[in-house]
Each structure stands twice: as structure tokens, then as C-alpha cells.
Image 1 (cartoon, rainbow, N blue to C red):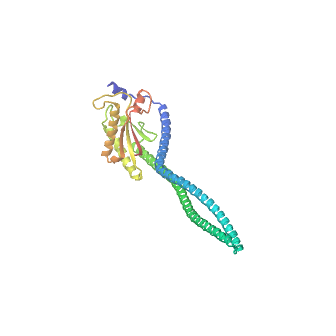
Image 2: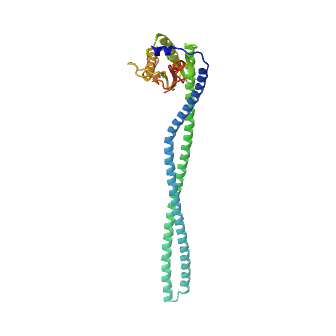
Image 3: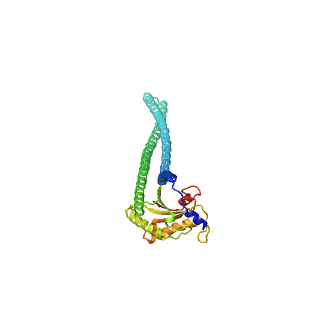
Length: 338
């Protein structure tokens, strides 16, 4: 009985809590915007992760092609050097062949000397033919190598073009994802604003109902008796108005927004221990569930409702005075994305 009497006592009028509520509202709006930004960054990082892996694989292939191209260019340089050396040897052999042919013509009548010159000329001609065959072989190898170099350069250019295209796609994906997230946030904000407006219109201006940040806050005494999670008749009447507003706003929310109305139960810091409610956790959760069940019975879609109990661990007001305890005993409605 002493606990019930203490909870029923009302504090004197004080404007300071209103100022604290305004500052808390501003802080919660900032926290909400930061949460949306972090969520956008998370989804963006998830979407880009796959692109980054493909990009890294492509860059590895480009590096491999670049190394192979450098190796083939080195081989080409070696072959060209060998070809130049053989060409020089061939020119020397042809000059020697010309010289021997001249000597042979001058010594046609020289007998044994002419025979020796013919033998030397024959040997030189064989060496010249062999050198020419080697030059031809080197020319074929050089042509094949140049063809391989052209193919490698074409593959490298294609890989680089694909790399640039992938990077452009990643940048475009990031822009489109940020734009989509911003649009969803704006649509949800409009739906929340309309929801709050309709609730305010349905319930009227009451001192025991407040908007704190992105939440509609009801004092527990509107719906429940002290220490109970059973809705009283006055609370059921108010919840019928809320159910009507929820069903009306649900028709106007875009179908691609996966929204949910979260019902949060909060208690004060006074301990409770009864067979039905061993702790304030149980009491706050039981009250949230009672509200959800009633809204469901009134025709609100169950998949759009969520019940949560916070006990005494998320207070609105600090201290143990009667006014702070009364403000902390509350039910909150929050329209958010699932």
C-alpha cells in the first residue's frame, strides 16, 4: 500500500523537465541521423565487398599479364640481337664467297690451285647456306614472338578496360545505394510525422502524452493500474483510437518500406517482486505485450507490431522523486524500419 501511495502522489508544476525533454529530443534526432548514416555505410560496404574481390582478382591478372609481356619483350630483344649477329656473319660469308669466286676466275688454268679454291668455295657456300637457314629460322621465331606480344598487349588492354568499367560500376552502385537509402529514410520520416500527427489528433492535447525524439510517450497510468499489466477500461478506449490511427496510416506507407511499430514498456526504479512479476523486466515486458495483443485484436496486422521490455534501465528522468518516477513509468510507440 505504501508503494501504491507513493506512485500516486503528483509533483508540483515545473518547467525544467520540459526544457530537458526538448534537449533530449534534439539529442535523439542527432543520434537517429547518425544511426541512419552508419546503416547506409554498412549496406554500402556489403554491396562493394563482392566488387572489391572481383577487382582484386582482375588486378592480379593484369599484373601477371604485365610480367608475361615484359618477359616476352626480353625474349624478343634477345632474338633480334641474335638475328643481327647472324645477318652480319652472313654478310661476311657472302663477301668471302665473292672474293673466292674472283680468285677462282683468275686461277682457272692453275690446276691444283684452282681445285683447292673450288673446294674452299664449296665449303664457304655450305656455310653460307647454313647461315641463311638459321636466319630464316630466327625470322620465323621472331614473327611468332611478335604475334604473341600483340596478343598479350591486346589482352592487357582488355583487362585494363574491364578494370576501369568495374571501378565505374562500383562508384555508380555506391551513388545509387546512397540515393535509395536517403529516399527510404525520407519516406519513413514522412510516415512517422503523419503517424504522430494522426495520433495527436486522435488523442488530443494531454499532459501525460509527449513526443520525445522519434517516440510517442504515454504514462503507464493511462493504460494500467499500479503493479498490473492488465489494461484498464480507460486505457482500452485510448488504444482503440491509436489502433484506428495505425490502420489508417498503414494504407499510406509505401509498400516497399518494411516498417514496424515497436511498443516499449518501461518501469520506474522501485523494485517489484510478485508471483506474476518477479522483476521490473517482467512487468515492463508484460505491459508491452498487453498493448500489442489489444492492437492485434483491434485489427492491426501482427507482423507490423513488436513488443519490448526495458525495465527501469532506460529512464527519461533522473532521481527518485515522485515526478521522476512517474515519468519513467511509461509506454512508448516508435515507428521504425524492421
